[in-house]
Length: 427
Image (cartoon, rainbow, N blue to C red):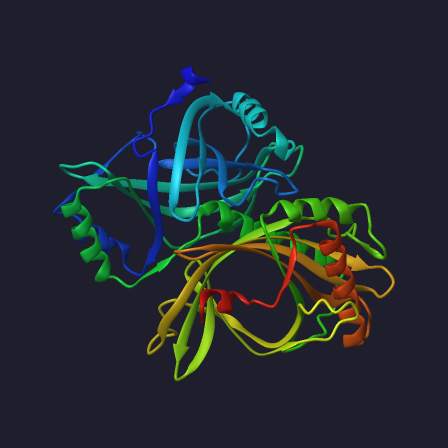
């Protein structure tokens, strides 16, 4: 495949994604040092992300095919056009990228050959957007892109037609750096200080967020449920070495273990991401879960370790209040001090207890701060199909204990834990 490899201008780079309230003024401020360039006469981009319904592609790997198009199409279609195929991986903002020019059928073959251990991969989700590029006038090592009119699509298995699952009504700014000129970098950092900016998750994970919401909405049309725990949550926590445990347990529960099984009405694995920021205001700590230009405010308190039948010591009950989503520049963070931040990437599947009509989600989280990361599994009670719902905490504790015990017994390197994400950050 060497003959198809395309030169990448910044193969090893630091990537920063942000959202600004006034991006046009920001771009005008760059004018002394930056200029706009065109990589193509076509400034609309169509990007396909490869994965499958089990979400076997690891958190830190991006497999995508990109092409430039005349305009955003209402219904994107998979054809055998030529794409720039990009394989990108790396922890946190540090990324390494390789690029090849291939037809889509060639891309499918190459990706599935290189990553055969992940099962069959296909163009899974897609995005279309308009992109502008800005580079230094007299230097190299840094590039700024502005993406607008971003739309997201899903390609069901066996279908060549994508359907819309979400869109964004705000511009995305991405800064790619690889040993930039110190003077240029200093200028850019000074300009950024003038504009209140918030971090963004990647477009790949934004697509997964939209798809997760779509699947949940569609499933509730088939079978409704009651969320009977109001104002608090009950869950267990486990420390794991990697996300491989999650995939193994997903396959185990698909066959059914004891009275637990993955329900036919919601057999999906979902994937999502958020940026979790922790703030202090008037002596109280609250979490802002940032997604795009909005944030959901969550407060948790009164952590209590629950007694469980197996003496696992990792079941927790705590108060939880989830507010509505609020606009980032609504004054929400005025007079609040930022005391911690992590990026949370999550995969999840759901299991039913066929005897009690209660269901639970099993998740694996990759939590990343600037200095460290942590893989954590959780088993959390989600709701019941009983109507009217009857809350029985002993029944819920028994179920969570059984599921957690199954995970521990099947995996040697899984450890019970009571460490919350805020505690892990040192808050």
